[in-house]
Length: 448
Image (cartoon, rainbow, N blue to C red; front, side, top):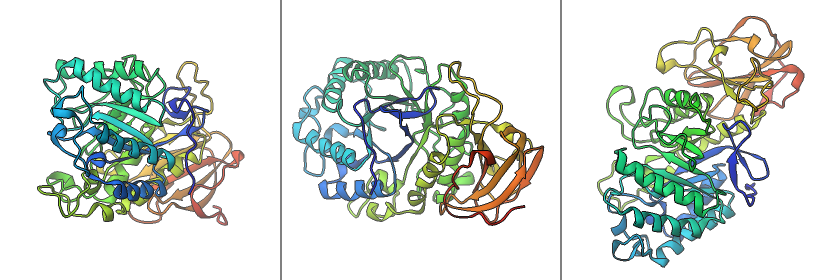
């Protein structure tokens, strides 16, 4: 099983400030799994099963909380150990954090980075002394600053006010100083859905802006707004709706499906996100027969293989198949896109004229991806592509297979219709670039 080769300076923003790269300049696609209760709920055997499964599914990051839940300081881990002595943040329990050490080291060994959230969703951080928070953050930063770790600040009790911002600023500034700016720091806001760039967009400690689409019917909207905000930061949806989550009311009535998970992921990434965090309701809380009062219905061991979990890596496969650092969102490719959010089409393309010096791109690219959530015509302005001929194919986000359509002259508008129901990605390439086919089993014998 291939793994990621981590380097001393593990991750940073790429030259245009929009994408992630590793220390040696290799492109890095954030494909995280949300595992909020991992450290608290699982023993080492469970951790091994979980991490090996996600590594095999080609995730790149495990996103988890150090302290999660309302009573996090009073909740023991699988071995009966509390995180801190007498609930005092300045007195961390060595045994508890030795268990966290195991999570980080095993994940890294399997080629998975870890996005650690010192204070997770629901934790009652309000009223904590800033000095205690700084001491706890310092402890964590020094313990893990030599590992393949990123940090996620924010997402406390669901309220974003001056007190909380003071707390997150202290935490972010401490992490920046104690890790010697070698590890990336992200901010995850309290509001769901996020409505644009975070308040800390210009803070010196911020490297990566996470958004929370939740159950928003337009998960691309906040990514689009954040992408247009200066200074440029890599950004992504760090807290979407969860597969198999009970979400009654409106268009999301019932359990969230794999189709809805794919829509959220492709919409947001094509809108400019540098990756995506997938979430499964039963896995986030590690639901099993002992879980009480939770709406999850599937044992986490079984939910690991829910459809979207097995399909998310096709998004990574698609993005990594073309020049990575030059990709930009471009809705001008779709002059006749539908206005109904449920049928929303989203386009992204290469930007071969981009010199990265002024964060502006050119007008055309050597390739384009267009996502359609349902079977409907996709009308594309081919003049947004370089070259004289374009090669077209359909990419299936459920299977990773592609269907070759042929070569077409680069002039004016052309309409393509997906070959089946549900969602598809139209792949367009400048023929002169001789790109390898996207996906597998691409039949290139047809030409129109």
